[in-house]
Length: 98
Image (cartoon, rainbow, N blue to C red):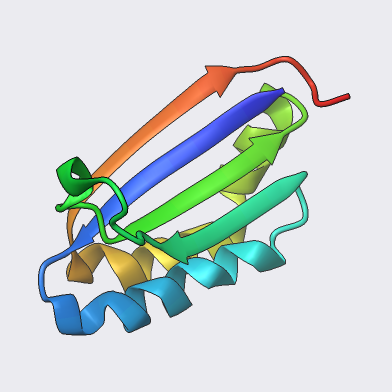
């Protein structure tokens, strides 16, 4: 299983809701086992720059690739990219949940 985690910061904090809406389009892509898109609750004082977190779980690399090649992924990028300052993504191999 692959865990896909992406952190975003907004250029303008007033746009966080628009960024969330643009990213939540991704939930209509069928390839994720789990996909969560939520604002950072800032419970860790060192996470100040991160405004939005995307967390996804995919069965394998093929599922993640299919997700990233879906037309809705491109639509989301088009909406969010102009509004974001920072985007940091990480993918890890993880054991499947039991």
